[in-house]
Length: 136
Image (cartoon, rainbow, N blue to C red; front, side, top):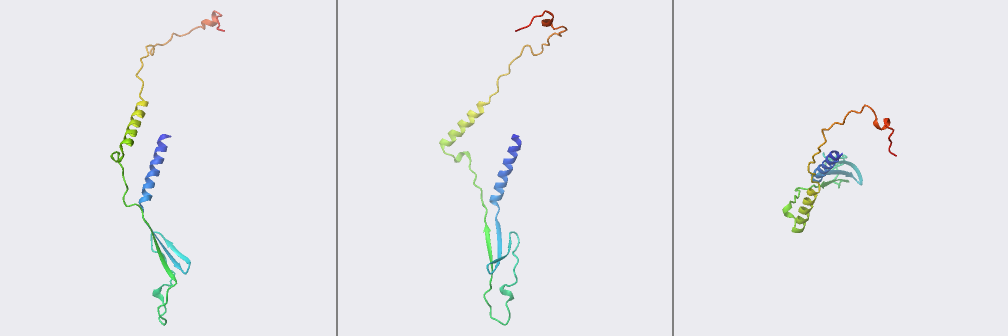
């Protein structure tokens, strides 16, 4: 159970670091106020009413279409703090906590059991039943 939780949390933290450093670009194409297409990895599909397709007889009119590009920027550098970056009070607390936690689980000295290899005699008769001696 402990190993499963450890793997679950380590995988979760790795995914958190991965997704916090990924940058995305979201392109949206609007025709008027209506969203025509939105894409993340490719260019957004156009509706065909762009300024390049204006009629030749009229002057260049203002296009009703517009493109929006949103950039979701991830972290460029991850800040790594070490033990040396802490102040003296935090260092003292962490070192005393680790020392007390490590000495909390000291193993007991190996005890010698003198009758470990002793095998009791085989009982052929139940002596208490034969002598009619019962504990009350």
